[in-house]
Length: 138
Image 1: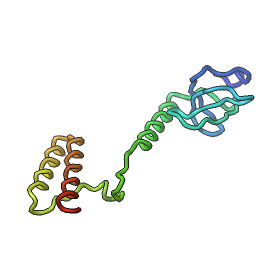
Image 2: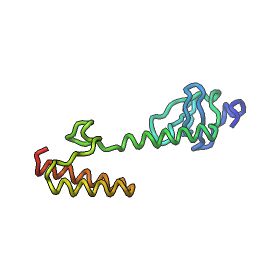
Image 3: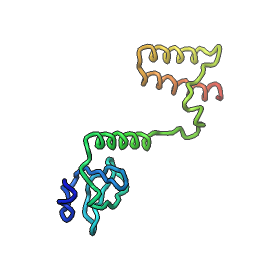
């Protein structure tokens, strides 16, 4: 889309454009008066862009915007523990010395870690925390 040629024409719906004025990449949604309505890739609040300052986004700009949208989505969907302080949720639980169940769960966690099974490691951490709360009052 040449900006000079289409100052009066709207781009195709869904076109990915770079707004030079705001430095953002967005998907074309509609025309509102003299402005184009663009929305961030991955969703979000629309903004008005001057058609004279908009051009098709390069593949690198599109990729960067898509990665940013995926990262933002991942951050929005991250579940935080309800009752645990931030530092406690990230630190793996330490087994209580002399407790056989703690030792077994710690061994399960070590085995999962050794085979690069991050899901199994997380499961062992959850079970160990649950056991410690239930049986050790931690």
